[in-house]
Length: 70
Image 1 (cartoon, rainbow, N blue to C red):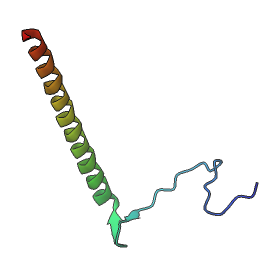
Image 2: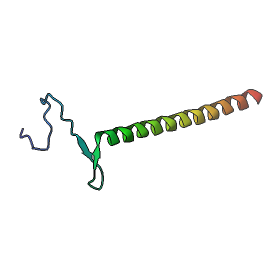
Image 3: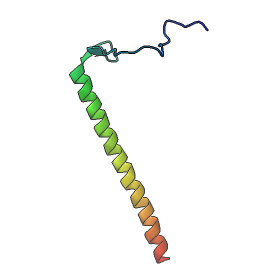
Image 4: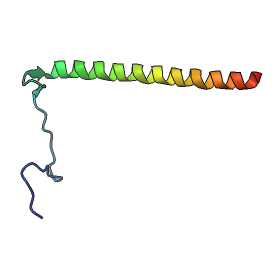
């Protein structure tokens, strides 16, 4: 099997941590900016999960209480 240059090697051992990441549009982002964006994304994701969990709980709780009175 011939390996193409774009295929990553499974035998690479080490870290390839770039100092800056490229964002859509070609601008460079520092590690701190990238970290902050990741933190914001994770925080928003957890908020969304919490809202969905609460909504599901309310739907389930509403059905159960409705069934108990019928």
